[in-house]
Length: 113
Image (cartoon, rainbow, N blue to C red; front, side):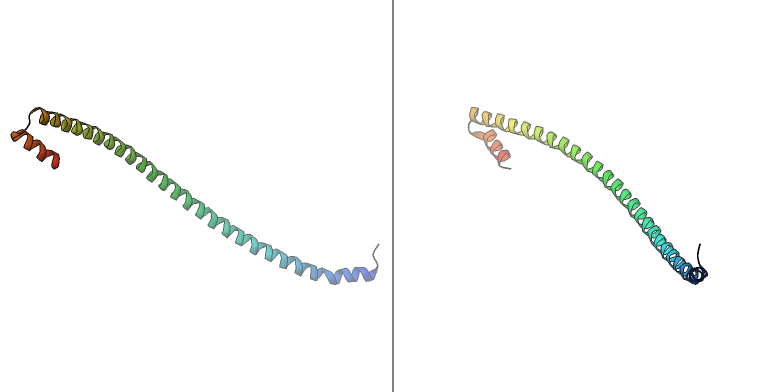
């Protein structure tokens, strides 16, 4: 059992303990408020990053499609170049077969263009 002096000491410490408790509770609420603000800011940043990722993904898809189109065009150009080279080769063979004259001059003009 507590003595009267001990009870009196406890009664004197009670208001101090209440003040300390209230001070700690106030600090806790402030920290909680800051944590909530940070969580809200982080959520906003996360949503912003997700939107940016989606946008970049769509842009990446468009670029992939454009690359495929360019590859297709490149193949067409390569085929056309192959045909042009074949025509040039045929023309050179004709030039050898028919020396001099108008046809040889015209072939030279076309090849030099």
